[in-house]
Image (cartoon, rainbow, N blue to C red):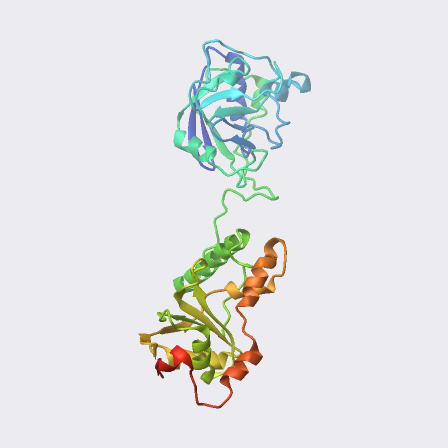
Amino acid sequence: MAVLLETSKGDMVVDLFVEDCPITTKNFLKLCAVKYYNNCLFHNVQRNFIAQTGDPTSTGKGGTSIYGLMYGDQARFFEDEKRPNLKHRMRGVVGMASPLPNANASQFYITTGESLDSLDNKHTIFGQVTEGLDVLEAINEAYVDEAGRPYQNIRIRHTIVLDDPFDTPPELEALIPPASPEPQFGEGDRLEEDWVPIEDTRPAEEIEEETRKADAHNRAVVLEMIGDLPEADAKPPTSVLFVCKLNPVTSEEDLEIIFSRFGRVVDCAIIRDFKTGDSLCYAFIGFDNDKSCEEAYFKMNNVLIDDRRIKVDFSQSVAHLWKQFKKGGRKGNADMQAAAEGHERDPNAMKERSAGGGRLEMKGAAASRSYGL
């Protein structure tokens, strides 16, 4: 004695324990015969536990037995048929989902986990899924909300009685429809079973570019959260150059004088070891406009300074943006503000050093150094 359940995830065959549970299996078989389960949702899916269905209202509170359909509301529920030899040992066990003892109606569950001892002797077990366990696993893996309701509807589309040992009473013949009910599609906040993502017709290059931008923004948000970026939308300044491969003896004053030929230098900082103060041989040089910065980039790359050929590129650092965030929380603190402001040079001092036109006069050790411009 068996029933074929056609669901939106595939087909399952349920073998019924007719001899152990004659009242319950008769109820199930006759409800399938009258197509009572057609279009019922799996309204409660708990991963590796159970998948519950059989309620036409999809609320978990509705449904009636075949006896209620034939004889009225007074016969809506029927008694339990608990058997000590029937346990929830394996996946695919089919039992009646009754909230109270002897309150069985139409709702039933299928176990999606093994060794569910907590359900033993509490519900009537009347069947076992023998075919379609892969379909049961697909239902088990569905994404659900806090109440266990799948975000994409999973329905029983059709039921086929493969073998029925029980006679059909006259009261039941009038309930059997001439044809199966039409498929129903609910309206609400859930995706229906026939939903598929809209195909993206854009070129692959455009999709890849958008994906990369989204990934970059997500990484920036993470860096903002951990305090490595002042804000996720922060971008490197367009008027700052990165200079590397410097000679350790080269100073900020030397770089200011050299790069000031292209425009007004507003920021010049050689990065140094915080313990020893020794140069780490790279620096950041900021101009007051993008044009001067671009000109310096094209002219100064691979130039010889203090017997070292330097490399120049546009800066990708946002370290100097921290000075915009004054105090507290994500805006940094007073120490960060002081450190940022310390990188900015005094414009008046730079004007004094660059006074005298194009002639450079170096004193002390710097007078003997050459600048390969």
